[in-house]
Length: 105
Image 1 (cartoon, rainbow, N blue to C red):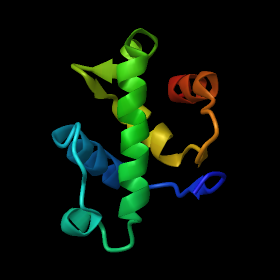
Image 2 (image 1 turned 180 degrees about the horizontal axis):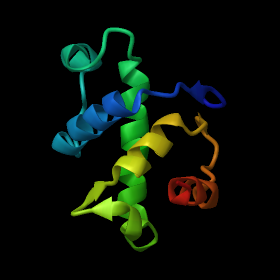
Image 3 (image 1 turned 180 degrees about the vertical axis):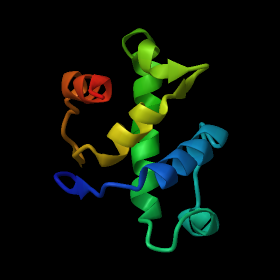
Image 4 (image 1 turned 90 degrees about the vertical axis):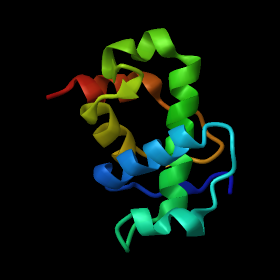
């Protein structure tokens, strides 16, 4: 719901959510059917939601994100940063902050 914080996700599970979202690029994902792919305590809905936002960003800003992508896939640093960054539903993302965090070692 608008204004709600999207829970952070374990980077490994977030990468799985990305793979699911990528495979179902334009389709509905039944959260219950993909739950077995994740750790038992993972908020799968939040993971898929974050993956959807990331997919939209990579489509909308390919040039800005190019240095953090590897053959169309986010780098491990990108996954880890995006999995843990604060996201509030209905609010804009701090893309500049995101890019700075990815660059930090």
